[in-house]
Length: 311
Image (spheres, rainbow, N blue to C red):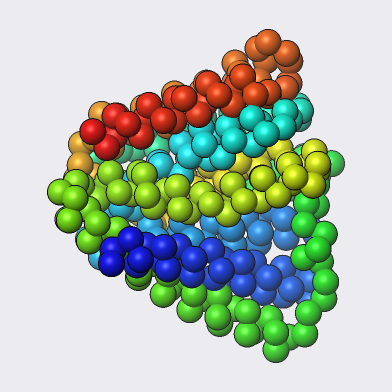
């Protein structure tokens, strides 16, 4: 029953996020907001909506480890699972923006998260404001100086849709996200209790892999279509957003206190290590390229991480 709740919850979250994305892009186009602004703000927020809703609801319901585990686990899964499978299927060229802006920003966000939770074991409101403020500053910087680096990767979403459809997508998307988060958290907590493990373990494995499924599906479809537009930047951008937006907004609403010390003694270090490891992999053996050997190394690291987390 718990597994069914998790599966149905994840499906609703993915569909809800997709409907929300359609309504957000549609509204932006109706209001004539420039495409670059849509891509960096509206689309990023909409695609992070499942993680955001799950984290806020988990924290408010008294399951902070599920909120933190979801984000930390998603960040590890994005690089060591989604990216790994993508580059095993097809090598990718890495843009120069990777080492100029994307990777340094991801490491800064990851380092800040570590500093904020390592010493007192909690994320409080002013720390959430700092995280979210950093995201706003980063977006302003990108809009001012990195415009040529932004590629519109979803031209199919550019169709103008009637206002009633925008409202409809917004309502059913919101209901889907709310219902999906309810079912997912209920199933995750139930599974944790039935297996005798902590919410942190379920959050870092089942929930984080589930919320990374849309990124994985998009990456595999892009590989099958032989579109080289898939970039490391998309996944790194998702990791930056997870920390600065999802945890930033969540901790602005309610303090997030670590209960399972495994988050501080193991998971956060795995996130920092995997995030750091991508940098040398991009340059060795060939510069600005990731191939199947890198993918196997990342996937092996992820399998080992999951093994030590659940045993």
